[in-house]
Length: 131
Ligand SMILES: [Ca+2]
Ligand SMILES: [Ca+2]
Image: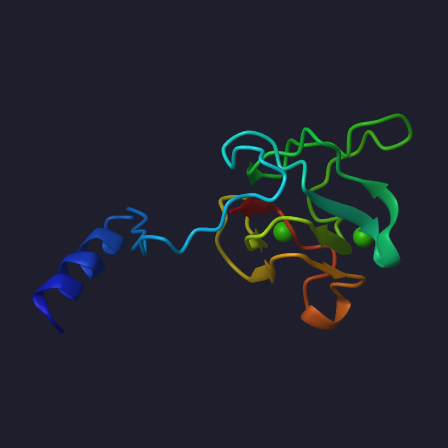
């Protein structure tokens, strides 16, 4: 193990998230919305085939435990309910099984949609979003 990777492993052992950024790799959000505000270009759906409740423009990164679908008839929490998605951003969006963005991960590729999480072993699991 190199000295550098040893430092990284040490930080990881301390629970510090280590991000190795590659300059120029990050793609801008297609909608022009800042990545640290609302995920208006990314939509989760309660059911397969983009059915049921859908996330609104106020969807935020982080835990889904206390985020609701957010409109009349859909006032339940998003946590462990998402079954399909549309990603209109030019960057990947990451979903995680655990509410602190760890555990099993699902990658929503840039400019993609997925009509079911069933074949990804991720149906009704998403509890956290990062990007
Ligand atoms: Ca569901
Ligand atoms: Ca979960």
